[in-house]
Length: 334
Image 1: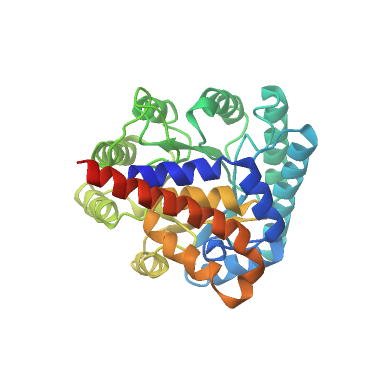
Image 2 (image 1 turned 135 degrees about the vertical axis):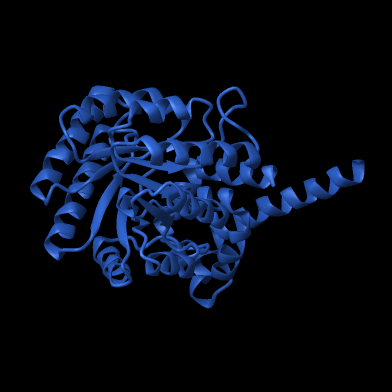
């Protein structure tokens, strides 16, 4: 459903919708996939997952950072969650986005912000800090900062997006750096990225296999795709690859029972746990990846407790209605 995917990606990039959603608090089903708006509720979630044998990586959600003050506040929030994690003695690290730390304001400013986080991470048990991948337009800035940091810190890693044509070359560059391998969550141009599921899946498998065979650092395989997961299980068995060299990773709120099953089988497992007020853009990107999760949104919109949150729900539903009408019209033309 490419049109539906494009629609949700567009919503994720809409500043007005994001700001409106922030004022209302998690709705539209987002409370199913966002751990909470504050640190306390997030730590409670991590503790419950830890009891299931699952570690966590925490994402302090944030969109449309346009000032140095906002970037500094984001940095302070990340440092605070690391401090609280350390004091609570929970099994969790952090995932950060450089745009939230000022990448699009000033690259050197973003680098210094990120370096400060890593210095603080060393104080808090040498907490691992993962630098998330974002849109292709931010790739050069992201890799430049990662390259500078990896020479000074051992507790930093980043993400490779399989839909990029250049993903293999980028991955090879970081053979000795901890990486998360993902399919990719943004919409990129045909001259930059693969456009079909079949092409992306093929490249994703190729990346995983090469990484597991050659890497000198830990690997996170982030997917909900049981076909990929089963392939990896068989691949590591066939090639006698240690389970200690990798983990499976999923998003909080998706395929939870399956996550528990994999952890119970003795594989390292990590849950990507987002939290904070800026939930809307994150949730829209998740719907873009899996439009069938719209049912979560609809159930929440029409629940009794969310009568005061219909405004955003109505906007989304109106858009979906237009998409449906457009699809019907397109079908009649054929």
